[in-house]
Length: 196
Image (cartoon, rainbow, N blue to C red; front, side, top):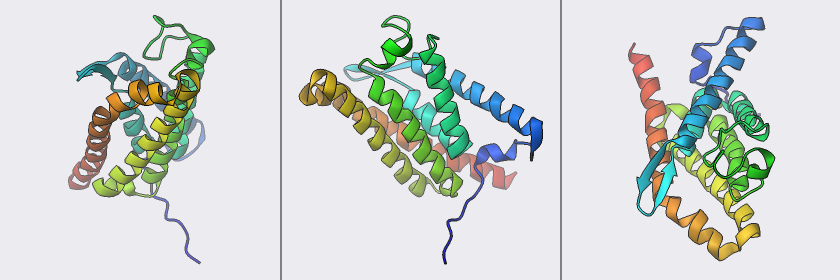
């Protein structure tokens, strides 16, 4: 009977083996991850007619470095921070805070980040983070699922045509660039570590 091969993601190189030290390190990393997500949400790159945040890049990098469980925990902590009213999202506090903001136009994308992290983290746990082609495939799948969730939620609010026009189409090129960048960076880090 074949079994799935589980490998260790990048974060495993810094984690203590067990006990309170391991838990404390994981908590610190999750908090640091939410800080990175907040900074990436507030960082805007102008690419064509829309401003694009670096948030999907941050989600993919966190997931690839942390692996499935710690990445999903980090994203859930990030969403909890936002639900409690901390201004961690791209449009907060200007466009609202807390649950009200999360149920607005970006709600599907925010939920999609968790699934995105799960897919990319799953790939990292299987060693795909060492191969740029495999990692690109996993990250592209994660991106498509996240965008589909965002599209579906937004379509319920403003209709499918406007959802496609304003919630998906302007972001395709930028997100493909971020996927390619993330899929290149993580294997490059592994390659550097092998040399060292």
